[in-house]
Image 1: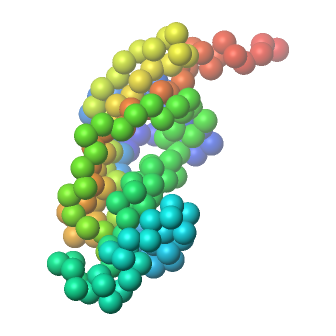
Image 2: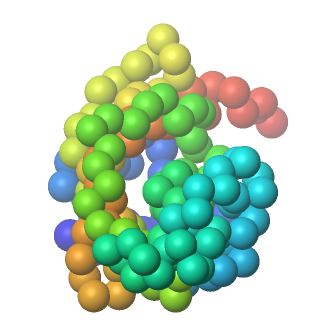
Length: 165
């Protein structure tokens, strides 16, 4: 299924998602600056990420981006596609997240996202959308994968909150 049609100014409402709907994000190259900044922000100075001499002696032969950094980049790549812009109410959970392969400095990643489940939640003003997510590198290899559950606003709750003229 092709990317859904949506306005760059607003995301999709719960009712606009369909099971099997697929979205592919743009790509992003992971840089040394990303790794250094994430180490500073998180306090994770594991030499696997921050020490080139140490990392050269590991099976990877070089520094590896933090798994949590790659996960964070994936959420940003998804949001940049704007399909949740203005309609996401809450990021509710991550399920079965797997780290399958290292992401090295200089690798380019993107996300392959598929709507896996829809569960109305009228009491919360929308519904739960479960996305099956794969973070894929420049070689087409899945490096991380799992499921995200997001609470998305309902079109009807949006209509009722709009004042009438």
